[in-house]
Image 1: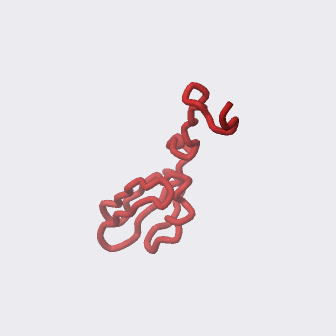
Image 2: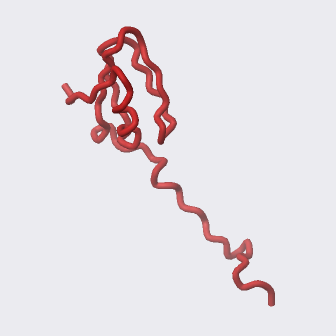
Image 3: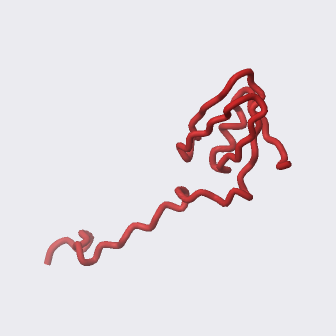
Length: 82
């Protein structure tokens, strides 16, 4: 009969998309302001999204999944939306 634990191709269960891969709506994304002297580029540790602050005072919405680590980066501070 074979191994009952071994899935046959016709019985394979499709993998669901990872819930952590979808980006949340921008309205839920925390806003950060760069206060450093030049520009800053960094990669979100969870999403692997590239964030580029072009100049001092630049503000970007950060994916909430990256917020904890990005909040610890020097010269970045969370701000309320304008």
